[in-house]
Image (cartoon, one colour):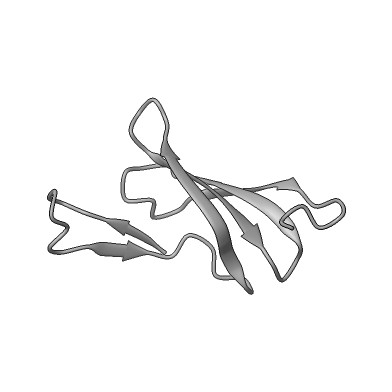
Length: 76
């Protein structure tokens, strides 16, 4: 899940599910692209894949999910 906050204290976080297929979200890392949209890398333990979620908007309501690596269990 990604918490999208409207204020610096995140008093009313809007939680967005980025990927819900299996055991996902392990070893995640987050950065922002040039437009301030979240870009999240994470490990999908179910499929043994390293994935990248690129948010299409600031709320990340429909991210593009890409398999970056799936050879030889890249998350270990």
